[in-house]
Amino acid sequence: MSFNEIFVSAIVGSGYAAGADSVDSTKSNYTILAWVGLLALSLVISYGGYTIITLFL
Image (tube, rainbow, N blue to C red; front, side):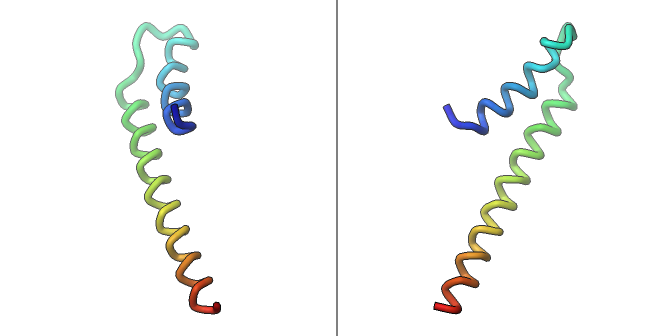
């Protein structure tokens, strides 16, 4: 189980912990969108950093 799966499960499950009868689908969609966006951003930053470092070596 990855850290991302734990994170998404915690966000989705927080509706149950707060006593809500169901998990809001909007909240789940924003969580998934944020996860995908951060994954894409981390890939871009990593690739950009690698490219810049290799230019100087």
